[in-house]
Image (tube, rainbow, N blue to C red; front, side):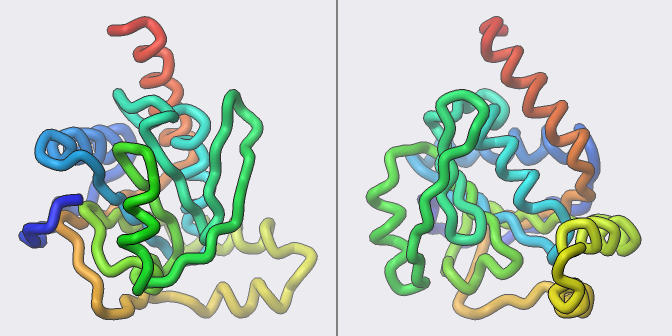
Length: 195
């Protein structure tokens, strides 16, 4: 994991441009570090879980599934084909580095609405953003059986950071689940054809 902290904001991007910028930044960091951490943050309903599950199923850019460890809300996801296997992991900020050392991968993708609650450092912090209308629509669908949960999640409008936390690079990705899925699928086919 890279430790020289030079925080840099890559900016706000969307669609394929944003996914490609993220891929390039990951590949650049892997040139100088054997393992990196990508933290994915976003308000409830921004699509974090769907976003990272695509990586668990299809890989990320030039990286195969075996090169990645995907953790979403303290659930480690793996798959041999499409159906996801999951395992709950107990993570604490003070034991994160020890846990990271046990993972056999090149990239750890960690998703949580407050990743700084569990991590003290990420090489890249990706903040997912969606329109408030889209976010509320997703939340309404997700919590349709629990209206009280919808009300709680709806009121969360800012991303908190629990210190200590730092990231070398930060970016905001305006997120569309269809585009990120198609991007992952494109790279999966491209890797399969060895282009």
